[in-house]
Structure formats: structure tokens, C-alpha cells
Amino acid sequence: MSDHTPLPLLDEPGGERADAARNREALLCAARRMVGERGVDCVTMEAVAAEAGVGKGTLFRRFGSREGLMAAVLDFSETAWQGAVISGPPPLGPGADPWDRLVAFGRSRLETTLVHADLIRAAGAGGSRSVGAHSFAVMHVRHLLDLLGVRGDLSLLAAALMAPLDVALLAQQRHDGVPVERLADVWVDLADRVVRG
Image 1: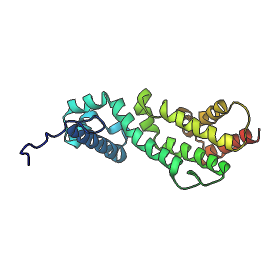
Image 2: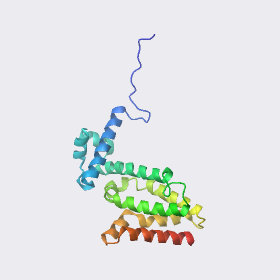
Image 3: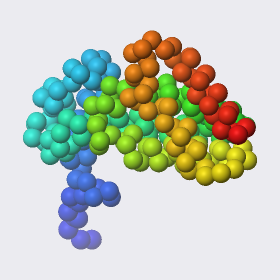
Image 4: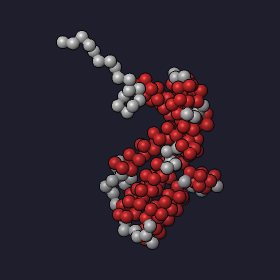
């Protein structure tokens, strides 16, 4: 029997050291908690580092900026939402009629965009709602349009259906006093016109 014991690995399977992974998780948990309790505008890098018990330098090395941290926080909710679309219960998830899924998708996207509006803005260009999340949403809508037998350039039609769900447009309409239910109903009417085309 050998008296040599293997040295501990410095990296986890994903290439991240165990202590770095713990710090990252502690920072994200602290940031999510603080955003939920205080709102995005009240969350500073200093406060997140103190809440997580991690040095401010570690926070900046990990996320680069406040915008980068907010993008990571947003990514957490975006991943959960995408999971519901891919494998959650119907009608948002699989198992419902494509039209019912499209309606559920639009209403859900509108609601989550409004709930996370401040976070989406704080995440800026680095937010997961920029390229990756938008691509996922357009691809999903395109898939549903295809199942519904819609003809034409499905990618552009899907992008057109996503445009009214943009955070800046929704925020402006809410600022102008348009009720959420009316925004949702108008989106469903637009989707119906595209589908029936």
C-alpha cells in the first residue's frame, strides 16, 4: 500500500478553482438577495463584497464592473425562465397547443421583462438579455410559428414579435400609464395577425 496521497486538484472540472467557485457563488447569492430586498439602484459593489464576506478586489476580478455583476444576476433569472420554456409545465413549456404556447410565451416574457426592468438596464450591454437571450427567444418564437404553419421569413417575423417586448419600449408604455394587461392583449393581437396573416 502506497503512503503517497494524491495532491488536491486546483481546478474543478469547469476550470475554476474551488475557492474561486465558492467566492463567485457567495457574491452572486449576496447580490441576488440585495437586489430582491433593496432594489437594483441601492446595490453597490462595496455592499455586495461586504455582504458576501469577500474582498472588493475579488468582486472586481470576478465580474469586472457593477454592470458585469448585474449581468450575472440577470443570467440567473434568465436561465430559470428559459428552463421553464424548454421543460416546464404547459402552456409555457411543452405539451400545449403551439398557439397556447406562443400566447403564454409572450405574456411570460412581458411580465418577466417588467419585473426585471431595472436589472436589465443595470446589466447594460453585458446583460444576458442582449444577444444570447434574445437569440433564444427569437428561435423559440420561430419554432412555434413554424408549428403553426406560418409562411414567410420566420426569423424576421419572430424578431418582429419580440420587438414589443423590449425593456425600453415596455418601460415607456408603463410610464405612459398603459396597463400591463392591455400590453399583453395587444401583443396577443399582434401575434394573432402574424399567425393568421
